[in-house]
Length: 525
Image (cartoon, rainbow, N blue to C red; front, side, top):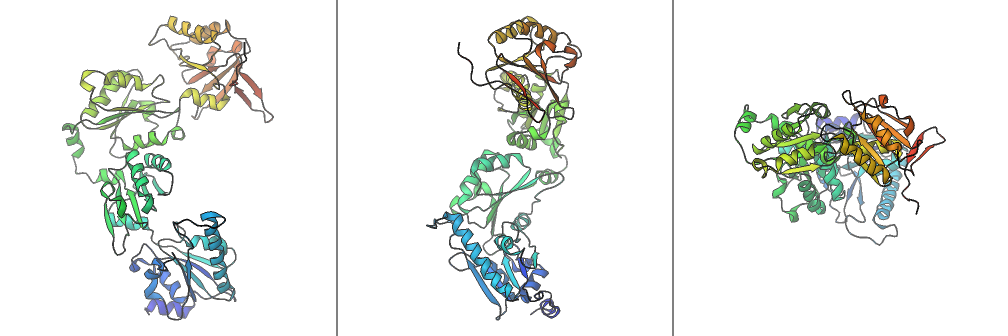
């Protein structure tokens, strides 16, 4: 027995309290016994009862880690799972079988605690991080004095064995169980900066596909049995699916750390020496801040080496070390598209940042138009959708676009007003609800009034009109007025108008809020 163990026994640091036992949840670390904390050793040595979980084969990894500190007179409680991955005929199914087991195990430990014995439930890693102990904690901690001894997690051990930082600066680390549905894994991997996926084994094929679909496979690393006998590390893409055990993790390490480790001047050399075709992603950021970003768009913005866009939209994207930003005015779409494609020709991963949905009065058309020209035909271009301003405004108001509707821009900068007027007439005469983009600005003040006149030829004066301004932003406002009362001076370039059809309803609810919706059923005749 070590000096610290002898001291722990002498000073009674794990003694029972006033005739009632004390419960300990003891984290043992990732597997190497030398990574157990001093406190973990103290508690194990001084406890009366050592409890540990195992599968039906009876071998406990937790017990093997702590074996050197077990005494011959320790009472051992082996908590043997009735099922692990196999099926069961329990009336409550797999979950019912486990719940019954946890209740029974907790009752066994409670008997020791009631007898005044101290009970140490030992578990790999950290007791409250995907640990078996937590099921005992939920059932016993409110009834008995309890202490949880934290342990080094498998995540920390994996990062140490890879020698790669998990997260740096403002990066977000996401921890995922491999048991999640593949689509959910894909979305979460695409949207985060760094990630660790646990519980591999049988889930590995789906995890690998999710890594590939989210674009993270080239970065992903693999760690098996970190710090234990039989440890293995490598590139995830090279791992044979049939060889992956449960005690393994997939790691998408820090991008910032990777960029920081590049040799000085590497960025300039890369820009000067083409490395083959890169890629252009036209990314929709939604109508405002990060709450409106899709996981796919969030991931694309994080992975890009260059960001190209209108200054206002670029300002919505968090700064990331190593990324280059190419900001420009709002009226140079073609030049912006050409810059993005030129960067991609030099092997760069480029994200063209667009507000709302890039395919709705935004950058996707400009990029594809330039990409269809001879110098750029070979450059891959993908469009990632975003929440449109029309859909965001409609959601704030209720469901005014719940039936057929038309989307029209009132800006005559790229098309003559005569075309706009003709389309307004056609849509209004068809009794479509309307989402009107770009209704006015400092240099365009008359279009809203003229549109109101045209629409009143087909719509009743009390038709609901929604004025949605700065949706999702700090100055958001949503108001509903009668078409006849629509005041052009209340409309600016940050406003979107939604004009109801003949069927659109505006109703004030009991809580004082007004909701607007267009019924999905249209009257016959």
